[in-house]
Image (tube, rainbow, N blue to C red; front, side):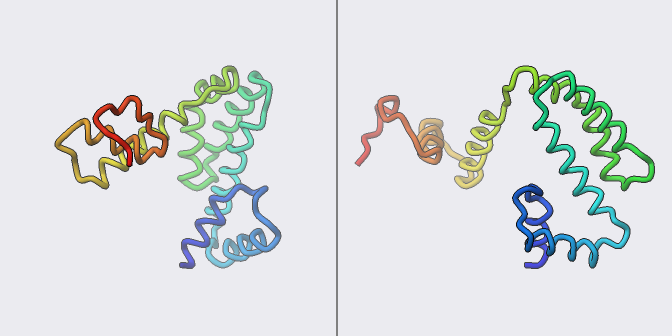
Length: 152
């Protein structure tokens, strides 16, 4: 249970932490992070999140390029340097979001939902049943498109 609470505090956005949560996070980091590696990764995560608060695409590009380079500092933990390399590699994609304000998030969410249905079902023999189950799981099936089924 302790690991779950700590993980929840580490993944929660800084602005969503109340005073109690922030105090708990600082205490956990002080007790279980003697070399400051987790603290560094947490701060890096917060800085990466701040990229999306920038309204100007050119400024976002400059910030992202600089952040990718800065996070690769040899004094940082391995995971943080890897994050820096990833940010550097994905800079143009991040900047593309700033220019177009479009994300593939909804598509990824739908793909995740469909994979979950498939995993729960342990496979379907009929594509029609798989399709119906996916639509039902999504919560808003269009019954007009499902001529073979009549809702009760």
